[in-house]
Amino acid sequence: MKLLSLGDNVFDAYLFRKELYPGGNAANVSVLARRAGAEATGYLGVAADDPAGCHFRSALEAEQVDLSRLRVGAGRTACNFITLDENGDRTFSGNNGRETVQNLFALQLTPADFQYAAGFDVIHTSIHSGTACAVLGGLARRTDLSMDFSNDGFTHVNVAELAPILQFAFFSAGGRSLEEVRAFAEYAAGCGVPQVIFTMGIRGSCGISRGAFWQGRAYPVRAVDALGAGDAFIAAFLTDFYCNGGDAPAAADRAAHFAADCCLHYGAFGHPLPLEQGGALLEV
Image (cartoon, rainbow, N blue to C red; front, side):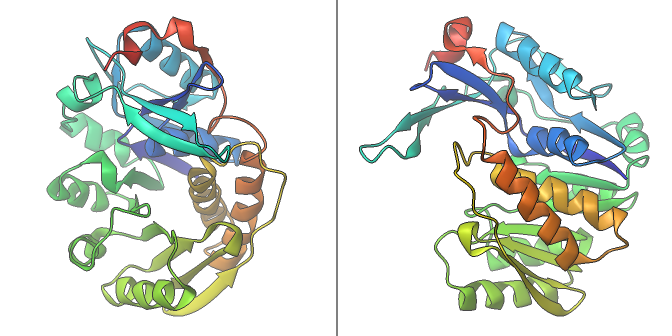
């Protein structure tokens, strides 16, 4: 099984630990799918040439992610700031603004990129990566396409628009009830998505696979950090789905174990950079 991730990368600045962790849905899935057993993974996106960007690329290379089509631009790496609230819970408290390479340079795909993408079993991207629908359609004509809509990136309109080109649609349930989740899953499936998957935290997961509704359990652990757990679920689900012959409930069970393990360390896949080495990365 070979997976290509397309789109976002960002550093997560754990201000309370004075550490920066590589992240972003697309980058995370490329690393975590490799760890979950994918034969090969690649990452196609825009990275910066600053010290943080160099560290990010080194981390991906150390995880055996192919970067042969990665773009590198002059400028500053994007960064989210993470603090602890009064209850000790992790919370996002801003970012370093729009003057970052990821925002200033749009990812434009070339014929060579499309040829490269055709060599993978599935391409995964995020609704927050901002890739044009026409580009996604071109990719979907070459191989399977997976989209993460997160917990805040989906509406009935954009799901209906993207459904014809998707093989997998991942959603996070947030505070939605199981009834609400199942109703939206049925809507997405009705729009034509063969595999609809919702993650619901400690409530487990559920979805519709080729018209059949299923539910999966979560595996509780003494979590250190839940950042990246959803991306770990996606990475393991896709890897196992292609390896087990297309059994979605079985893939979800394997993914739940893998996501639980991801909560036992800080950052989505580790490789921290000391905060003082971030330089201009932390300037707003």
